[in-house]
Image (cartoon, rainbow over all chains, first blue to last red; front, side, top):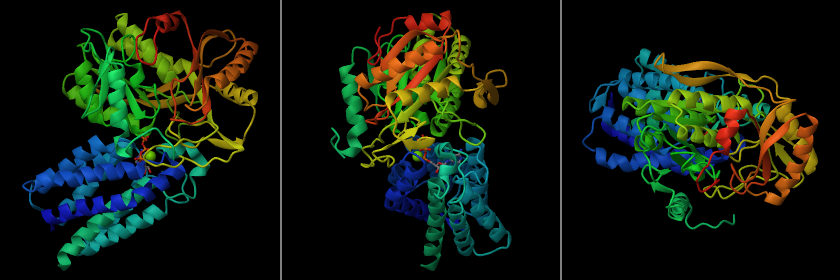
Length: 213
Length: 355
Ligand SMILES: Nc1ncnc2c1ncn2[C@@H]1O[C@H](COP(=O)(O)OP(=O)(O)OP(=O)(O)O)[C@@H](O)[C@H]1O
Ligand SMILES: [Mg+2]
């Protein structure tokens, strides 16, 4: 079970991480892109954090839809429509309530990531955010299938995302701006895979902190 | 970083305010969401043209808003695509009942944001088409990359389609015309230096004093190849050969099909440019290269085109589509027929292009 407070904590935690890692993400994007990814993510999630203040009465579905709209209208770049779609399709797949089941959380990620792939048409191995999102989803699916504790399941999912992120380093980019570099995109970690890892790990942190309180 | 700016966060809004008041005879700027639009929009029964993209390419796109060119332009943050709500609101503002054409440079972010905007506007009953401009011959294959980037042909597409809209072309005709411009035009660019976005404060890539980047896009990203710095003649030779030697580039573009009422992949093949063709030839500064150096490039380009049996029907030398203060140049050739030339020659009244 995930509570509304945990979802709020997740989004706020993500906002903190993107603020802190803004320079690092932009540095990664400078190597194989156009040096804006950290700025884009930070701009979007600061807006999300601001908007959360007006959502104390909203249910989880509403909050996640708000995140989608906020990211779509403030991030720009490739990341805006992609993360926006993740939250839009994800929110569309869950019930309106103040708490959601573990399997609803799984649906959120499943449908959200499907949406990202439909919009961006990236496959595993193209050196994009998909490379950390798909492994995280796979792990989450297995853990929830095995009835593992959600805190543990999310922690493992974050580890998988991290591994997927690191495994983008040797890849040649086939999607997005980095693809223009061909061979020169090798030996660099993908900025979007990195920001996706942060998103998953922020959720793991938010849920585990809450349950240990 | 030395720039004529105030607070970094205010750069875009401050500049847009100045832009709006400097050109208040031609256009207005809407904030939240941000877009520039023709003062007299909507023009009843005229197809409306909207383009947009990251800021930092001035005069593209805002500078091409006015009669004879764009009805609206949606600027994103510097080098970052605009968001769908900008194009959606702009479409509602300028649609005169004859539909809206989105002219989209082929960058992943631009393509996706314009697609989302088109979906939103269509829900409101506005007929919207997206035409993608992908003219950068430096990108060789489209299977393993996001495809060729949009460069100088974008400016010509905006001009030519703008004139056609004035001449009463309907949405289907303008869409077809815009695709034709894209198939007939090719560009290639290079950089002598990187550029600095205000948000970052440091160069977008590191380039040694004796090195240059060939095959750059327009966002301060590195090119497809880094090499020893060469002379203007040698550089011009590389760019012109890049364009003329380009074989029949074929790729799939994601386009809206009014018949199927859905997005479809359409296979598109470019026209080669060669012996006996007439072209509009553009020598464009990336922002930091002075006009005088562009004329040096022009002179060599003309010699090469003449040798290849290509006639320069019209020439353009200046700042059209830039990357902030980057030093460098791009060459664009558009193969023209009488239809394209007629619309190129038509009157236009915008901050960036006046004739
Ligand atoms: N087609 C795609 N599918 C999934 N992820 C993608 C795709 N294209 C790019 N990305 C991700 O987006 C990240 C870059 O996001 P960023 O915010 O920097 O946008 P951008 O490419 O600079 O956009 P723009 O072209 O508008 O400037 C990449 O690191 C990659 O992970
Ligand atoms: Mg980027």
